[in-house]
Length: 274
Image (cartoon, rainbow, N blue to C red):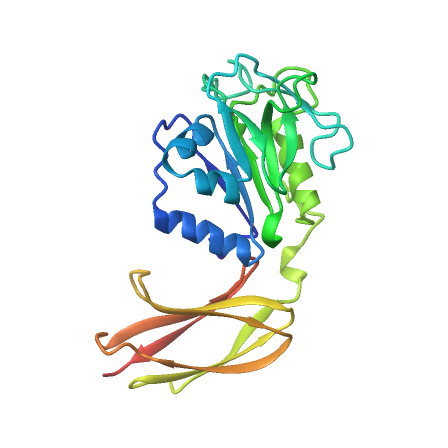
């Protein structure tokens, strides 16, 4: 997750959500580090209301009301920076996946705010919320974005919803064949300046520079992508050195050191000679 500024969890037609406790902790760590998260799909609220209501209320910012919404026509919230003036048809055979059958009715809880309503005269019957409690920014939609009927003349097409979210988070959308934005010209947020000794027989000194204030993770992983060591700390702009001890149970071979945050990363190879 740490390579991306935004992660979307889409449940599709899965009835039993395959999120383990480790998955939920990973999403929480990602959000705490400034990453943006979108949960979208039918039955998510109903599932967590039964098995993990704390995750539903505290992370997603919602309370489960009902699992059989009869209305698939959703309205945005007037004045809301994301959903204002949007009218969404959450299902249909043209322009969408046509896989929405049981939309959950939810209500924002705590500091969360509603994003979409099933009916204007029932403001407590909501189809989407935004939870910005504890410095996080979580979007929870009780309908699947893939099911939105884009073929109808509605304002709430998938492209519009996602583009508003990206602009809200100041993430520049880049479309296919778009030559107006050369991302390669952006200065690196951080980079590994030096990694030594290389080869090493046990200790590595990682020197890196960061331009921004924020959480940075350092991972050591093998050629199969398995993480053998990991640490994370908050850093101010500057140049830093971190010492890493190779775990005793590792065998000699090629390994990789990667530093990263939610936006970018840098990786260098190291040889371990035991």
